[in-house]
Length: 183
Image 1 (tube, rainbow, N blue to C red):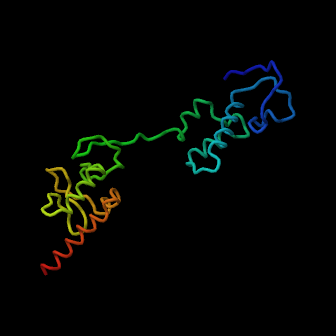
Image 2: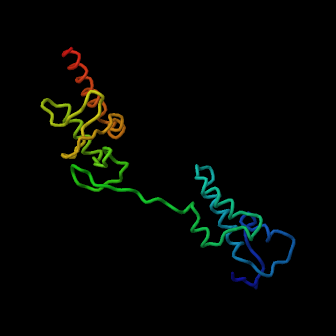
Image 3: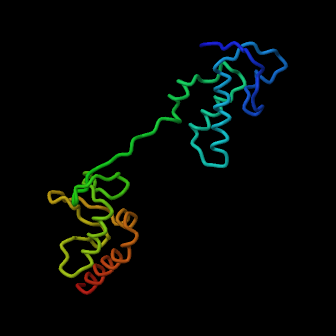
């Protein structure tokens, strides 16, 4: 830790000043913990009136600690869990082969992924006579991978492509009508 010797009178905005600077003591040296307190105040202002994670709340709280020895250093703050971001998982669509974040489509249990665009095309195609896309009575769809016999759940399809929900419902309705006519 490097102490900085004060050579000029202290000039700052009081709300950003560490508590140890506000006491009626003469300050000859300013430690890095003083700056870290200010960082905590800036972060608190930045996230004011917004939803923040518990990790971010914890970081801000530790940076604004009354006790300078309890404040993290800059390096410790950067390694805090509040700054640890999980990378976005990506996968290739089994139909178009483009790369997408996994939350932009659906997968069967084996992980064969279909992007929303291709899924929407599949739902619209399934609504046509002589469709090659196979939807089941419960609204689930056979996996698009040719060697896979697993299903993609109907609710996952409806959630992924809500703009094609009417087509999807129409397909399910036709299954019920066909089954009722067969009975």
